[in-house]
Length: 254
Image (cartoon, rainbow, N blue to C red; front, side, top):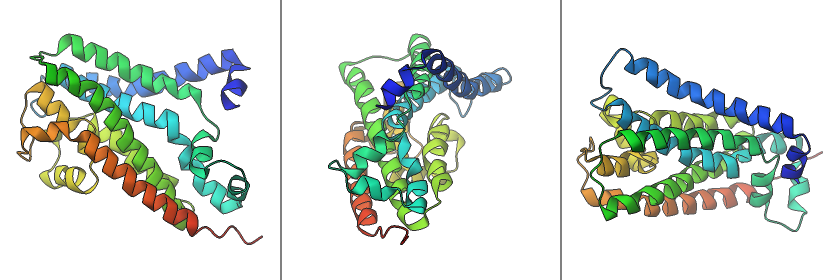
C-alpha cells in the first residue's frame, strides 16, 4: 500500500530518493575532506576506509529500508494507536516494519553500493575463495545485526515511550562509527562494540580479515566467519525483548 502510494507521485519519489542519496553522500565527502589533508587514517588508506564505509552503509541501508519504521513505535505507544495493530490478523512486528514504508531509503543503499564498488576497484586485496564468500555473508549478517538493534530499540520504547533518539544513537550512530577504522577509537570502545553490543561483527572483524589487517583486540582469525552467529544471537535476544515489551503494553487507558 505504501509503495503504491509513493509511486502515485513519481517525481516526488525521485526527488526524495535523490535527496536521501545526496544527504548520505555528504558523510563520504567528509571522509574525502579528511584525506585531502592526511594520507592515512588510523593506518588505513582512503580505499580501505571507503571499503569499511561501503560495507557499513549497505548493511545499515538494507536494515533501514526494511525495518526503519520501527523507530515510530514510541509515537504509537503514546497516542494509543498501537491498539489498531493488535486487533489485526497480522504480526505486530511485521505491521510496524511496514508502517509508512519509505522506498526513498533506497538512496542510502545505492550510495553505499557506489562507495563499496569504488573501494573494491581501488583497494589491494589478495582475493581467495574464503574472502569472496565472506563478502555477501558480511552484508547480510550486518543487515541482521542492525535489524536486531532496531527491534531492541523499539522494545525499549514500550518502557520509555519517547526513546527514538536513544535508538538512533545506536542505529545511525553505530553505522557512522563503523565507517571509520577501529584503530582510531579507544580500546575500551572497541571492546564494547565487540563483546557487549556486537556492532563490530557488521564490518570491522570480517573486513580486517579481507584486508589482511590485524584487529586491535588480537582476536583469532576464525572470528571473521562468525558474523552469522552474532546476527542470529542478536536477533534472538531482540525478539525476546520485543515479546516482553509487547506483553507489557497496557494502552493509554483512554
